[in-house]
Image (cartoon, rainbow, N blue to C red; front, top):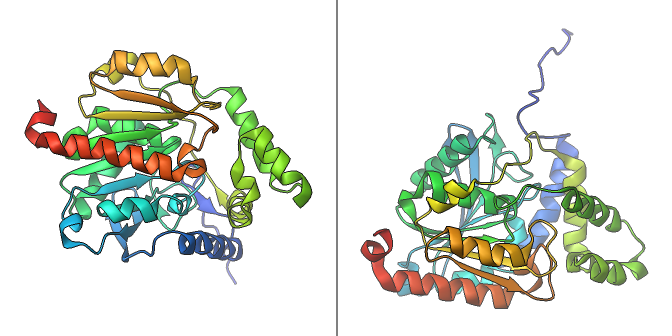
Length: 312
């Protein structure tokens, strides 16, 4: 047999092997089953690979015609992380959850897209392939950087942007990476210790067995091949004219919430910024009903103005 000389690209995310990938997918499917049932799944092609998309939506035809929500998950995860949010959000309007190529989802990553312009091109191509001309874009953590970057570089399709404890506002510091490492280590702690660790780390997901299993398997199964994104410059933030809503956890270690509470509205005309208490980096996971309600209220306000008023 000839020796396999296929080279593994070092700039493209990948699964370690098929067995771990399948176990991870099975754990993700448990989370999907805890959220709203997907009305459809589809794959769309972009210049950077295949993007896997889950479509959720209301049964009411009137609600189904409203401007849809597009969800962009955080680094290292997939759209399974939105399971606490899809039931409430999809009652109000259509919801699309994208698996970002380069992270541990069902998308297939073929070309690097960590550079800001390429990341914006990927999202533009994915939304175009889905036939979505106008969307409310929501991103968490790294997904928050992606949606802020989109508002800066390719805002044409965006009715609004909601950034949940986002990257893109500050340089990612060692305190955040330390928290991520300790939180991952804590998923292997004895069951009796997990509630105390969850409280200490502001990580309630440690007490959710299904999510703990999913996080563990994702860390083992997938290798991310991209650097941490740089924050948007102040000039880039000033350029944003898309209605913007930033929601941060009071105990966030990714951003300094009080600093950004003042800074974001000062730099982005008309932007809203808010701090959610009793949470850290995952306000939409820890308090899904509260965050869903506030996001939907923001989107309703934007829709009431109409596209012409928003774009001026």
